[in-house]
Length: 155
Image (tube, rainbow, N blue to C red):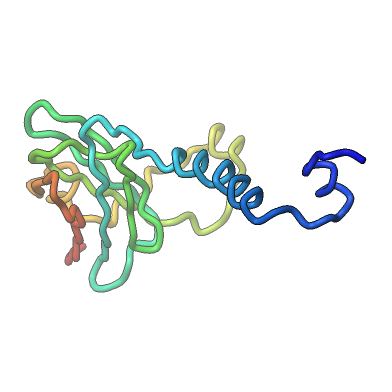
C-alpha cells in the first residue's frame, strides 16, 4: 500500500479537503500578481466623438500637438469615434488639435494603381480652422476624463 495523495487523485480517489484548498491557493495567488498596472510614463488615455454637420465622420484622423514640451499623439477616426490608449496617450498639458477627413474614393483601387496614378488630391471635408489653420485647443488633465468631442459645422 502506498501513501501518495497525488497518485490517489490520478486514480479518481477523493483528495482531502485541505489538500484541495492548498492546491487552489497555488493556482490563484500567481494569477493575482498578473494584474499589475502598466507604466504609461505619465500619459493618459484620450477619446471622443467627431461629427461633421451632425453626422459622424466615417473615416479620418486626429492629431494632438503639444503647445509646450509634452508628447504628441494621434489616432484614426472610425465611424465618428477616436481613442488613444494611455500607453500611446498624452501627458497632461495643453494641445492644439488637427482633424482631417477626405472624401472617400468612388471606387476601390489597388495599391499599385494608386502608386502609379495617384490622381488629383482628395477634397478635405473639414474646415481649415480644424486642420491647416487650427485654432482648436484642449487641456489634458491627469484626473480626466479626457474625452473631447468635436461637433464640426461647415464646408
